Image (cartoon, rainbow, N blue to C red; front, side, top):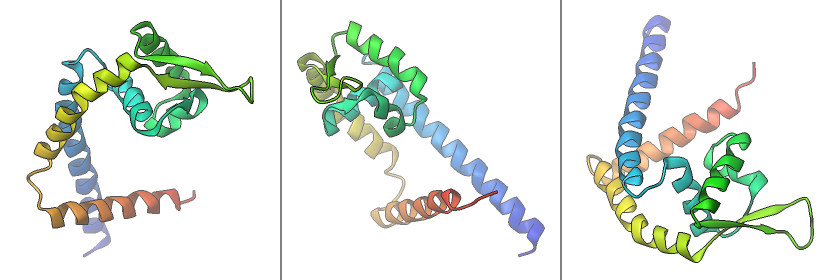
Length: 149
């Protein structure tokens, strides 16, 4: 393959990955919004549900959100009664986000459908194809981290 063809193939891959992500994301976000949450609120609650209490300063990095937006999202979830802030007993500089019983009940109710919807959307691929895609996309992502300009 010539360098020009290789470059065009790279651009095509980028477009295909972008469109697939957009299509998946739009479908999943519809499902989340039907339950009165926006995707970021859902991501924070899902993180707390599965990983337990989290320092507010670390949530953004775990759900790929700018740290400035975390305060806003946490405020909204706190007003809805779905999480609360808890001071760290050992370090006054650290505040944890903790899912409330109401937040846990909401995720208990909506997560199984969320999980099933993702599975349905991925059903065009076989188990082997899913494994291959996971390995290839992971390889791509890790290689980008190693590039330096």
